[in-house]
Image 1 (cartoon, one colour):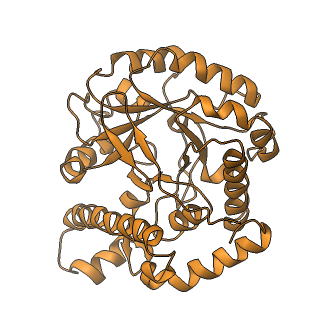
Image 2: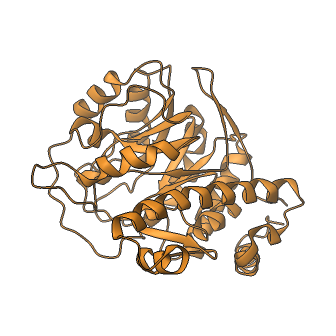
Length: 336
């Protein structure tokens, strides 16, 4: 029997080492507005927030290709995850979205993704993510082969296989297929899955993460699991307890983190900042303080691993996390 929460050191070919668990602030033009000149709101947000980033961040190849972000010419963080753009061109929304906006994306193709990866400065450490597109539905074996072919072009960067549902009618990733192909997963540096496609409830998603983690461990594959779309004080830790190690999302731009929760931004501003401050000040201050919160949460996760798995490390959420973990244990008796 074993505790699934863990830490892994990933060594980048350019000499950088990153240690999980990682809480990764993400940027995407999807869900944010454009001004009259067609400039994405995310560009200004990124320019402001990048001054406070240190370890990792996630940006989209789509946003780089369409100038929604300025070109990356220097290492803003130690390692940058470059997502493949499938999120921006799909009608897919992560679970933190309050309302669904219609999506009218520009054209996006594998050739465009490769052009973006080809243009990436070879001196900036990155993690490149496999291509996905809402109009593309491939068997897992074909997803693996396509990712192998793509990443063979970039031996000086780390990579992530982002596993997607295999048919148009599938809402969730078929976990049994992932387990059946577990030996092939060792060809990648990171295995990615979106939170929304892991199952219909938090417990189901935890159970599925644990099942994949056990199968990979049994095969001698310690490759870390990245859950896309999960970056908040509760679910990130729950998935960490189930065996995932990397978490990203846009919640830190949409909400304020306080008292162990993700709070409506203007309630956060009223409670933690001031009711007299300008809205733009509230937004900027919330982003800055959210990054500090994520840094502290990361420290708590590392301390949890070092200090005999003491749930009290997580302060306000200790009881909830402990109870949820014990519930996960009832679903998989291999978990201690």
